[in-house]
Length: 369
Ligand code: NAD
Ligand code: GLY
Image 1 (cartoon, rainbow, N blue to C red):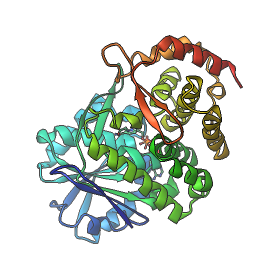
Image 2 (image 1 turned 135 degrees about the horizontal axis):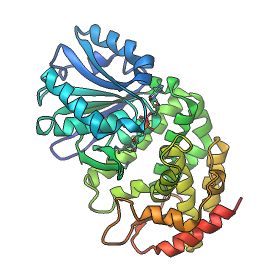
Image 3 (image 1 turned 30 degrees about the vertical axis):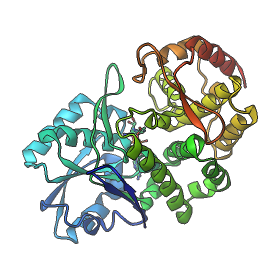
């Protein structure tokens, strides 16, 4: 098992990574679960795959699971589910010192974390991430949120978990498409700050995705180490460092908005294409060699992901995609900071990107292929 500390002043916590952590949930949480009935929030898919394992693990320590099982999918991150979940926790009599468990992907983690943030002005919670995306990104760093009709993740809070247990065995039941989508976020850490890790992904990504456990532990650990370093340095995204985690996301969110946040394009799939676009746009501005941008596209194609904007089948102009970016929550005093690259592993924040230029670039990308 790997243990990665997240060094936040006065509030440090651990991310433990290894196969079988859910089966030993009781011991892993020893000293933290004060209640005999432990409140656990999950979704129906995760409950079907892992509910029994979790129940046994708690039972072995003389405790029982008190489940709240929500529908799977992005629509669960809503005001309605948030209110009902908070009411449920209040009815259970959960106190500030109790720990609420979030068992699932980013949807369950974000919703549970936000409920924990506002319940009694802040309760403890433990992340039990079961998707690759949640293990390498959303369970670490304390961003919690719900969606509203105005957009995704527009209402939320920074609220750090007390502990993160990333069970690599959970990835065995994850649909391959979801695994690949999460892998885009693994590659992101190489692209934004560690060219050596990107080269490792090129050499080992395919085998890691097929199920090699040692490779999985390395991929998740390196990703979490990178995220922990950034979060420790810029917890509230004020210095510009944490914003680097948005590499590929500004382009990606425009694609998600255009496809209606539907199953046609998962978040990680949009981020993969978004990172290729960010690299190609950087090359167009003369910041990095075009060959480096194509190296990224080649890797995503190699592991079976779409890499080109022209592959999504959009029927719109670049201007329309650029207009979606105007609604990005990172808009700041009329400008939108973009994460661009001086090369693989050398991301930086550019606050002077002209959206007209981005629209022209996207037109060319839409027609390519
Ligand atoms: P998700 O939570 O919707 O999970 C994807 C699908 O996989 C769901 O159908 C789920 O039921 C299923 N699933 C999860 N674990 C499984 C398992 N082990 N076996 C079988 N099925 C399983 O999606 P996600 O990609 O994990 O998270 C996406 C969400 O994360 C978005 O809402 C996004 O905004 C958020 N996010 C948050 C942060 C953050 O820092 N808080 C960062 C990135 C993304
Ligand atoms: N996923 C981006 C962040 O945590 O800042």
